[in-house]
Length: 449
Image (cartoon, rainbow, N blue to C red; front, top):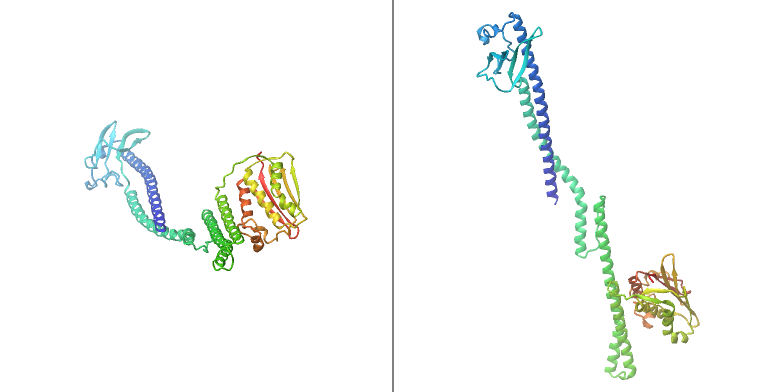
């Protein structure tokens, strides 16, 4: 690419130089022709004045022309500054009749320079000289054309040399960042993500570098997420698989009877693996944009009351008081009721898992008319979440206390699924908490009812 650009720069420079040279030659020749024409007219006028003086000196007669044919005749009465000593053809006319013609085969037709011969205010004849270029001007023209041709060759040489040098310097400056970007892209293609980025000044190249850097960052993030997913899957599946394998080995060795209790343990662990895989598949579908929604208008209060009733046994067992508020009272929301039911079930299940007995839980839905949004809020009086864990609670498999959540049956995917369902509705999820003062999860959806 660099060689082609340098060659292109040299060719363009040559074209411009040759064009400038021939343009200047055309302007010069045009000016020189005009100057030569002016000089020719002045010269012919001067000759006509000399003939006027000779005519007057010879008694107003043209007889002297017949006795002065050549300077070798011993009577050089004609002007000798170009009329006789050159091959210039000229004629003298009197009343339209040629009385004298000079030059080999002097033609009576052709391009002539004409000047009247006037004596004491009366025109006595006419001088016609065949168009010519004065010798000194012709010599000057030849010298200038020869010099200009040599100058053209010198200019072409300097232009080629300069264009090559400048092209190498400039293209090295312009193309080096592109070469570094090319090496960076090649490293990224080879899955080497720790690359060195050039210091880019040009806006266009900088935009390309920013775009490639964003792609690299996404690839790094994707690789880290993939590695974390594999590690988390290995970690999550290892426990139930170990329990199943250990229990079956113990039964096989006769250490435990294969009774209802053993079957129950095996069944629970298999169901835990099934729930994990089902949640993971749903989360992957949501993140891939394949989570299909079937939205409909839902009256919020009856819907929320029905969800709370599903947990009535657990709530009564732990003596949990649920405070529910809906504003306005007849609030309706356009949403996928099945998906959003899953969201609230997940949030209430998490709250019940950690909330102490004899405490309170709040569930609310509020319409924000200024922003045309609906906010669903679930708050508890549990132990809360530490500040360092808050930015990560919506990530898959993230646990602030892994052992506690695993023992209570969580897969670590619930809040991640909640966030993806909210995003699919065009909304968002926010989590607020202070250790020892409970946690609040807010689901904000656009109001389309």
